[in-house]
Image (cartoon, rainbow, N blue to C red; front, side, top):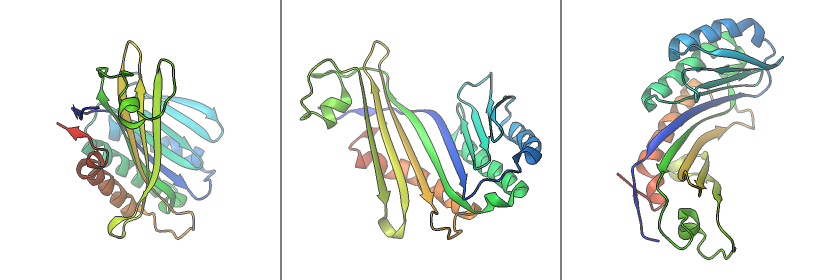
Length: 225
């Protein structure tokens, strides 16, 4: 398949922070935290209680804005926002959470995810599928291809760095064609070393941005405008 050049468009960003152990004190701090999130993101949202330990904040103005706050994690997702503004929001929300909950000052997992649109135009080829023609051309499965997904989980351990990365490529081969990618860069502290603090989270975010802009697409043999 001929190499293409893509003009990428961000769909949303997501930052996730997970605790070593649940903090069951969320009811006493959520009001102050939610007020801060609303002010920082300039979003008015509905609070949807799922159970005693999980609430979801949703915005009627932006369907891709979401905050999931539970006893063991805080996940912030946003769209129609520059990456720098999203990163700043995520860091400030984490700082506020850490000021209200000592359990969040040393994290078990922290990471950031981007979802981007690569193309809405179907390719020409034997199967009219970029994934099949480019990555699975020797995978001889008959029948019309409808939806294809690739998921790679790998470690980045160059130059003494150590990150866990999940790469997903999703292709919908229907009338409304789409070719999308998700790249999730995160770090684990399963050994309870206590090294994922605020400074480490900022390092993770900086690395994720540098990896996305300088290395990822070369590794995938993709050209970006």
